[in-house]
Amino acid sequence: MKQRCQACGVEKDSSIKEIYPYPEDGLVDDPIAPLMSIDCQGPVVEGGTDWRVVTVCHACFHKLDVDMWISGRCWAALTPVTPFEQLPRLTTKS
Image 1 (cartoon, rainbow, N blue to C red):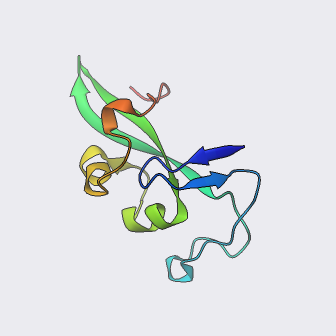
Image 2: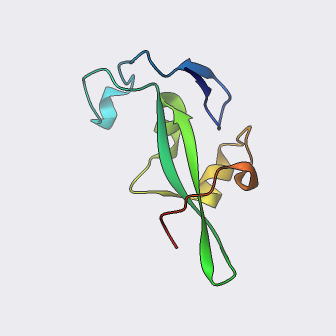
């Protein structure tokens, strides 16, 4: 199935695994999915935090320097093709 990176817009076939091209990150040596999902913490809205899910390619993941999640400011720094407000909501966090 084809999907797009929500940051740069590159289209990838999610059924074809890729080698992560940044060995210095120490992420993994085996082939992995070409896109990754990350939780993105937005502003506090109506007493709760507005969490979204971002899907990014390996190159954009590398630029983000992800720990456990990213902030909305970190997302905006990529000048993404998908603005924060258009990202799908994450429903498992409050």
